Length: 74
Image (cartoon, rainbow, N blue to C red):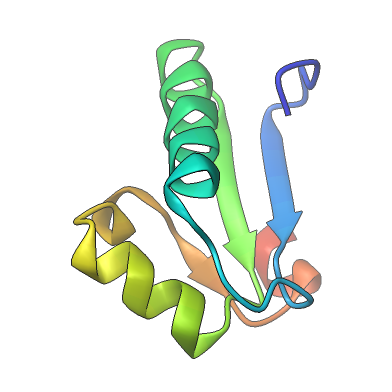
């Protein structure tokens, strides 16, 4: 994620069954890096369990969620 210089980074989390504090930290770090450079970070296919964890940790508000990569690209 850190090496990406694309204007939009799309992360497909469809195969991620759960996320812990390290994963949340990595996502927030990527978000901060992208925001400060004027770039965009989008999450695709986030499972209910992962999204619930993001809600509990109050980071859900920082990320746009999409059902598909095509929707995130549009």
